[in-house]
Length: 222
Image (cartoon, rainbow, N blue to C red; front, side, top):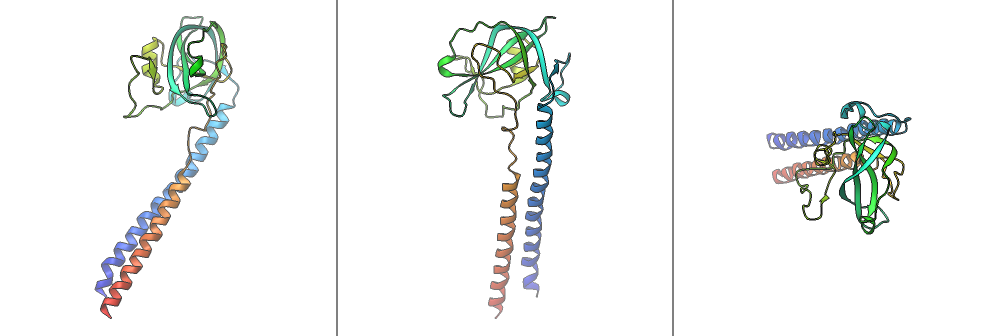
């Protein structure tokens, strides 16, 4: 009997751990669904005037509007659009009537339109406050030769454009033929169901291997 004890305990503990990880993924899936539903509901709210001091935790995804003028000071972030050639997201400094300088993500420009002249200065911008989490430890710094950025980094972009760290992602066209790329939830995956299935399959495999090992022990005894 002792020969079965350790493999049985090892098998039960392993299955319990793997099953628990699977159920944790299911809980995360539900939490993410609630989070995405809340974002979708907030995105659809009526735009309000830009707050005096936006805060990420309080104001992320809040629909806002602001009137002012574009300065021509821009940052181009390497991007792609489905069904379009590679291009950039155009981030431009925007000055409000009281002198505040913020940033506006005007939208997507295909590669062939990057050097087209832009004439819009005065504008009313409608969109959503956003603090995108695009960067990670592997994101390279902006290319000094081309000026291209490889990810949106609100504090770094604000420092480069000498604005406050406030970014409005335009939901409506801001002129010059620039296609807006509104905030939505398509970039926030909820793939926890797939991870849960993987953990449950591993638990089943572990249980099968444990049973096979116990069978082998029994056969050796015979």
